[in-house]
Length: 433
Image 1: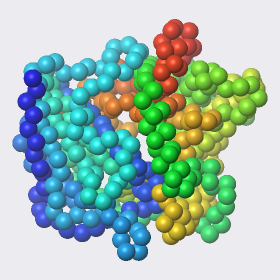
Image 2: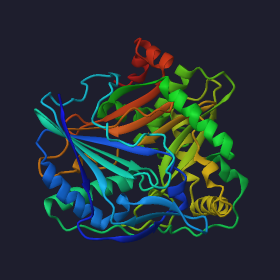
Image 3: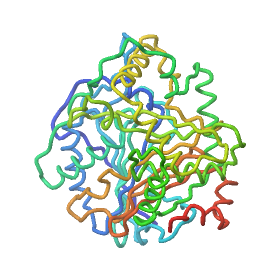
């Protein structure tokens, strides 16, 4: 039987103040994120608590609570509060990454996590951590409100915690200011990046996603570096325009094609692949290296399912949707969101994820340094996260460096997940093996 103890960790130095959230922070505030790092070495809970206290001194808002100001704006207010840190000692072997494609199994390392679908209400925690110490390793799980970080900022946060643990010099987080001025020429086309609800419909949609999540299974599929190179080579070879596309464009196009076939879009209808794009890589205005917060946008690419949309056309559509994100469009999106915020109407704006109608969704984290985190017991041997309760959602993670390639987590309705496991659909996914 695992032995569990609970601790409250406060900043090592008293901190009081507030953090103003940007409009990009407020859009995903309905969601919490949970991640688990698995280490073959043993992590010491006392040392982790000490370094977490140091981390909280630089990032005190992690121990804060979301509040609404009298002006209707959203702040995170912190006044020296603590975060939950749970330690579990378990004599069983540590869970290991599956060596082959298959159904993703549930795991208990995130039992201290914040639920995925949650509304960030006043007084609720924004950050929690859990250390599970097994007979042959350790698992460090972190759960955090999406209002505070996107994946880029989360990786920076974990690097800072690991640096504090090793006694390294660290860079404090920077401002959450956005370098793109709000563009007054905001127009209706910018609405394609979002879903829009009134308050009642937003609650109904949350319930629909919750129900849909209960019918989801997650299948993990590993693509080798050779397979990824084959996808890009084929897409680039058959691309008539000769424009450059990335390996991630080709992978997105391949998943779009195969999952679209699994979903059985009607011939002649339009299918949509919505990608989550990191705005740090778009436009001519660069975010400061110390920028900490959310800076992502949902970008739809659309094609008619007429039988002629091969890998190259899909990859070009993905790349073209990203190229549209110039300074003018990003500034227009900011103006649109700020206008909704002034009307206290942002709670009805969600990232575009029309997965119940025509969308497939993809989020690619393969370029993040997930496996570079080192708390003094070696770098992680595996990184994982709970099943995402969104149907037709693909999450691309880097595979462990010793293996290479990527691990794709496919969240599918149960019937589609069963069909994927029958053989033919899986062979099509591995057509470039």
